Image 1 (tube, rainbow, N blue to C red):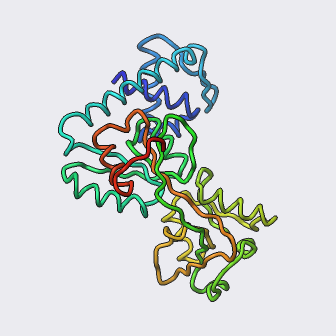
Image 2: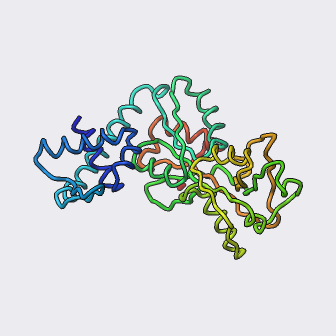
Image 3: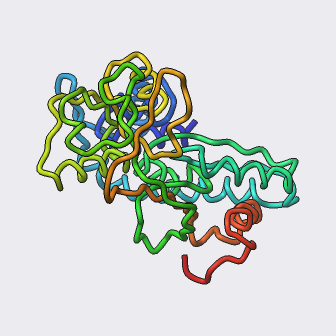
Length: 293
């Protein structure tokens, strides 16, 4: 219970919001609030100032925060060590994936080799997946961002050009190719900020001196696809993410077009962990890992 209370304190302090902390911890907001109050009451310390609906961390909370972060990190590392100890042919491997296209083929090969390993895949945008990796919430992560963090090892899985998704009844559906200027006349459906697809789309428009007339933001690739199926707007996807559907037309861009890379990351310090090392061997052609990734 003590560690659980500390987790609630840490994430509220880090995110500045009980709502966001509850979402991060997969708990209800009242549960997070109760855990923080229980911690404060048991030790007679005020961790947050409460002003209406706003929270601000106290000086005491700020002094404790680095120690709490270190303790939680050690707890996660210990849990990881226990999960990866013993028989290398069994255990659990957690993967944070921005898109299934590249990683699922690797998982398929991996599961043939490690039949008793339970593989869990969670989704999110590139920034979220890298953060989950450094927070030890996942063992490996895919991201379209080229990270320079020295804690991370990187393998490039591939690159894919951007393409435009439109409804089959859309005025552009009969085209063979489109241009950046075709994006500005319709509702452009984008992922949330932190998505590399959104970043490349915005860069492509900015380079052409263009701005979309109207933007709809949806924080899910699958939900965006459903919105295009319902003719609610158009959207830009990496080509391999644009799965077939009778109501969707996928159009390539004319001329030079941004390409969306996909990288596989792991923590450098965990490269030799048995289950992680096995996955990296399946991800790299020939199973030969470079000295520097």
